[in-house]
Length: 449
Ligand code: ATP
Image (cartoon, rainbow, N blue to C red; front, side, top):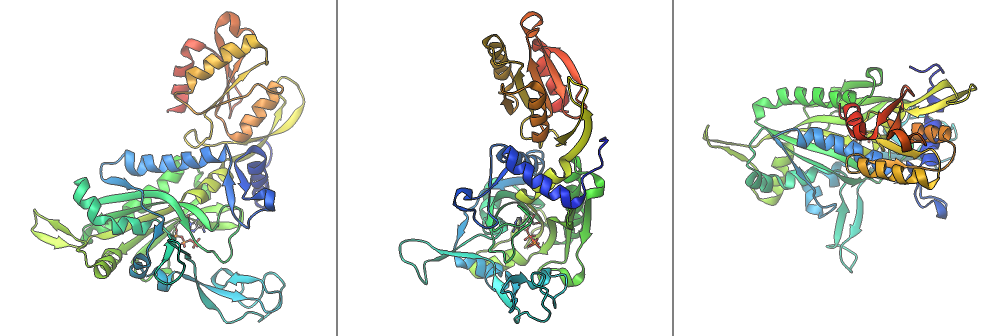
């Protein structure tokens, strides 16, 4: 596809991070105050990207199915939930301090647990202590015992605590799922790698409740479905894999977990975990709350606690993977001139691209602004559009390439006579002259395919 060699992995990371800042995808949080460690804000283009990732997930997991319903549960939650789920006791990472340089590390993430990666000292670590990752705060004006609440470290528990409510109101029966997208918070010991690991992030999780004897089959089903989702949205095969956890990696409640992994510049790493959680969660919440969290199968005349298959993905982490996979550089002749240059282009799948169309009047002259705003008004109800009338047209095309906009629509002086516009394709740079009357159909045929 491209003539220039693909950027080396180490360059790719820096190039994507720079582009994110330069083009308004992601900004360091609180930057005017010197930044706030490993926290990020999504800018005008990033918010569209992130929204598209979440919409694509929701479309595939809820809209296109009849067996999954949605939920939006509270972020603030009482200790009782986390007592029952096991998070208060078990949601910990092993923390070590280097006695020489005083840096902190997560022991299970060190390449060599004997050597400090910061200062190189050997055997300089303190005894590992278990550090709970949940953020604790206080509800109401009085701080202290009894007022403690937690920011959820995952969205999943909302689906378990609402199992009965959803069962009673939605007319669903196993196998059925509850899906949720939302923010989660973890006091990570070592956040980093840009938005890959942050303390505040967004998750896309679904709990799929099934009759116990069907759980192996549904586990396989969801592993395949979820891998296909990334592939169908344009992540190339060689950057994706499904990795089954070894026995000793499994959480205590899981009888099977596989991760969808992406080849990041630093190596394979997790985008999503698909776990067969058995009936652990519903039984725990039933025992702690005193509620019956079961399903009564009238036809068979039997009562059972459903087993749960959970595909749990990260929206922010996945957005980063889409950025990494889409980044490309290619040597091209400058459009309209002979000279060569390297063009940077984000080859996003149309569904993921922040803007679908950019409307570009060739000049700022009022005679072109009028038809250009008409074209914009024609397209806006259907597609997220950018409108840009500054700079030379070649530079505007380059800007849209860096935003990953699939189509640019240029209004020029001929438009005034022929009522047609030029449609430029991001990937091929091919230009078609299209009558304004047929523009929407032209774009639909390409964007909605
Ligand atoms: P890790 O091993 O990377 O800490 P995990 O196995 O604890 O992750 P899960 O609890 O399975 O992660 O969470 C599901 C998904 O949520 C992950 O696959 C990831 O995409 C996302 N996620 C988890 N923690 C973070 C984080 N700190 N920042 C961004 N995304 C995260």
